[in-house]
Length: 389
Ligand SMILES: Cc1cc2nc3c(=O)[nH]c(=O)nc-3n(C[C@H](O)[C@H](O)[C@H](O)COP(=O)(O)OP(=O)(O)OC[C@H]3O[C@@H](n4cnc5c(N)ncnc54)[C@H](O)[C@@H]3O)c2cc1C
Image 1 (cartoon, protein in one colour):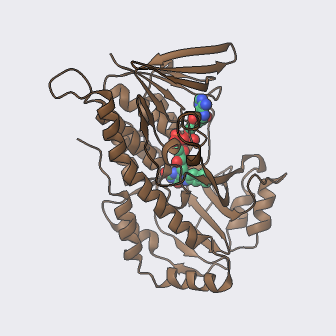
Image 2 (cartoon, rainbow, N blue to C red):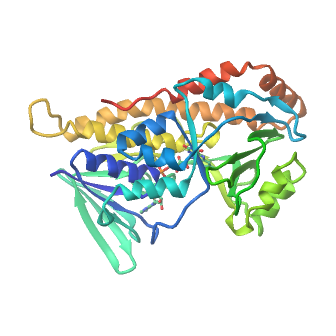
Image 3 (tube, rainbow, N blue to C red):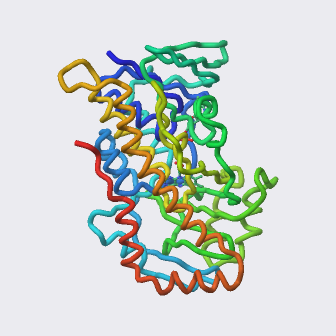
């Protein structure tokens, strides 16, 4: 039986492990975190991600835990609607769905699809050695160093990938976008009349209801790399506390220690390759992008499905291909699409991050005058992906 090591038990790594096991691979996932603590806030899963999750066998679980996003649109900080029917137009296309879940639910569903012994927490990858017939990983644990070997290494170790840093040229390291993001989920269910995205000067805020009635919110703004505040919730309120209701109330309904802040990075493009010998980059390790399209995690799920599908073709049977050919097929199938959506995310960030009053006026005018069906069409194009048969 072929054996794979997956580094990173994020969305991409867990999905890859589920997919590879479906294809008959023996898989071990190594994760640096000491346990599967609930992570993050909300995450939007579009139709493409939902199809990937169906293929992986966890679609039903996620649909049952997610809230289908309905209603809402785009507002100005004063509360004026720039486009009220945008979300309805997007979701009126029967091929487009968007389910909002708590990240912890997504992680839990993927973890539950793996046997417990397949995921080893508290193992931090430090170095990789490539050999002709195997790849060796060196990991640090609280009990000392551990070494393991496999036919394949899936590097799903996120934007700060140790594998990529060791084996890919340094000019392909992540770069700070100039934008930082805060996220939170209200501690308790919160009555939200309408979901919205609000565009202000170089700042965007979103409020979206989760299935259990709590509200997931995010805010972006510009700041110097690495800046932090002693109280991030107070910092968010300082920036957007005066915006239309219920933004302040939603942020205030979140405990300060639960407010997350992350600087946003992206990988430079075009990227030379997602694969090398017996190693495949996957998810943010391959194509970290700005979250403006809400597709980074969705694409990690797509990557996982495609990787598993191409690896199902490896073997000595008639028509079987070697590992190298399968990884090249993965690279060719994924790199153009992942990078196209990363570029589209950058384009949207240019619109949301404007600051000059004239640019703000033009941006708002553009949002107001763009027919919702045009925006809906571009979302439909971005989410139009189907798993290989
Ligand atoms: C503000 C914000 C909002 C977003 N919203 C959305 C959204 O709505 N929809 C969407 O689809 N995407 C969204 N994204 C993007 C999404 O979060 C990422 O694309 C996704 O989490 C990538 O998953 P991953 O598994 O590739 O990486 P990660 O989630 O980063 O997981 C990597 C894992 O590898 C582990 N790891 C790292 N280094 C090592 C090591 N050396 N050894 C062992 N383990 C290691 C980490 O601990 C982690 O568990 C958003 C991102 C941000 C920042």
